[in-house]
Length: 72
Image (cartoon, rainbow, N blue to C red; front, side, top):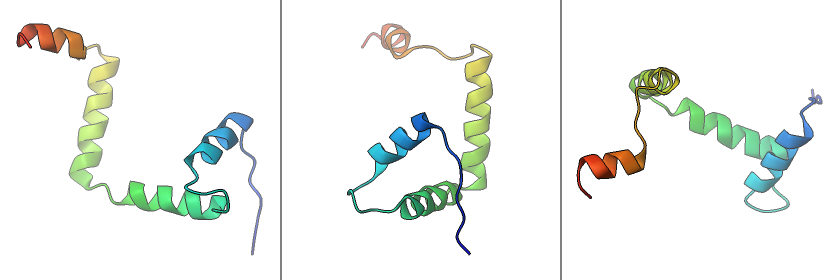
């Protein structure tokens, strides 16, 4: 059974830009995105979650700061 979903124009624009070719269906594109997401290991998911927390807490430094620190 097919169905329709509502998405914002902004999301539609992003999806259009992600298509590999014009004739690629949105369903194929969404399946590809889902498959990519499912391939993350549990460890990777935990690392991403930890990194997001550190970013929100301001525990990260910029690339420029890192270069200065290591004199690159």
